[in-house]
Amino acid sequence: DGGITQSPKYLFRKEGQNVTLSCEQNLNHDAMYWYRQDPGQGLRLIYYSQIVNDFQKGDIAEGYSVSREKKESFPLTVTSAQKNPTAFYLCASSISAGGFNEQFFGPGTRLTVL
Amino acid sequence: DQQVKQNSPSLSVQEGRISILNCDYTNSMFDYFLWYKKYPAEGPTFLISISSIKDKNEDGRFTVFLNKSAKHLSLHIVPSQPGDSAVYFCAASGVPPGAGSYQLTFGKGTKLSVIP
Image: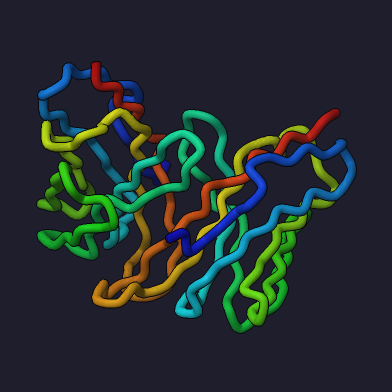
């Protein structure tokens, strides 16, 4: 089955620790995205990548980092510099970012920083 | 400054009746609009989209209407079913200045409850 997987579904970390969220897709999509959702809020774009070895900051990139070494994978690291990291994180992909294409979402990871 | 607004945080509708979810946008650069459905603790799933050159798109029970002059779109669900109970996000697609690629801008969502 083609799709996007995110792991783990729930993640707990102590304040001050870096944590990496996994996102893998087997849809052969070029573009991948990371969003953050807070209660009562829409999805806000953290980082996106149009192609392997390339990525750009979204609206709320401060305190986050990403890499895109493989087409299938786009991990997100939440660093200790992120002031309020507790949130629901969603990864998405689309065929390309060069034109309008529907984005497909993974199941999400809920990160709680204690 | 919110570019995509869903002014109703929640909506309750009787089963079998019509559900109408509304969305307003401010930026004329948007050229596609999408609706996503989201259950708690899951990722959003795509429902329906509409190009800015159209004013209506229909897919089964779901119809999206676009009024470009008013910068307003709406999602109609007829007839509403209990399984439609979820949060619905409106999203607009466009290329922000300096971005070089299409991005989605989301509203805050409307929680629809369909009462049996």
